[in-house]
Image 1: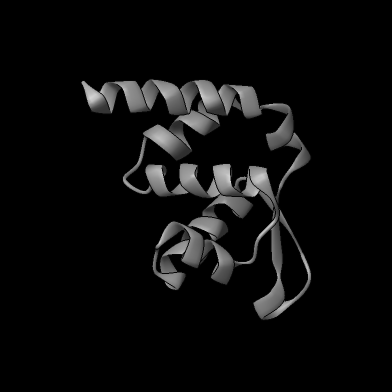
Image 2: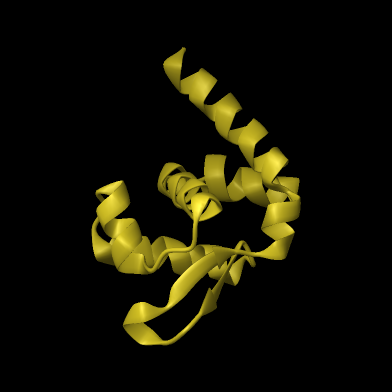
Amino acid sequence: MKKLLWWLIAGSGGGPNRGRIIMELYKRPNNAHQLSEKLNLNYKTVRHHLKVLEENKIVTTEGKKYGELYFLSDRMMENYDDFNAIWKEIDIKERG
């Protein structure tokens, strides 16, 4: 899981937005519209990142269509400390 998180968060251009989505979903479940507003991101951008996270079993969903809520998967919750360590390391590198 740690390798997957490195790839999803640090290994691609969309990683920082995916990291922000993960942090928001850790606080509470949200739908794509809510995430878009909270993170000040385009709705389609959020949907794209949620799809990537869902395909990699980082998030799960409940509900249908517009009101569909996103949750962190049990697997992600079990590895949230690894995510935090990666996130902090990336932040430190970006600040110099």
